Image: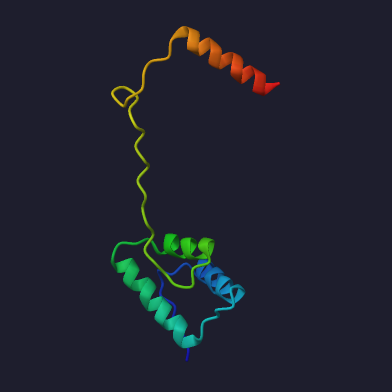
Length: 104
């Protein structure tokens, strides 16, 4: 079976994905490669960046191809109103003295 690679496919990343699959002892047959390419095309049509999908699978040694989870940066909890009391100058000086002890 001759595999037709789509023009949108990053050949270098695809080869790296195949190498990773071999290293985890899960090499793809030609038919499995065709199925994986179909899956990657489906992910692409759903708006996923195929390079990101491949990089994520390579980096995490995933056997399959999955949408990349876009994690939003966690929002920092505001200090005011969160149950924290302001530090007094005396407390601040004590904290600084304690930190100096651990620095030396």
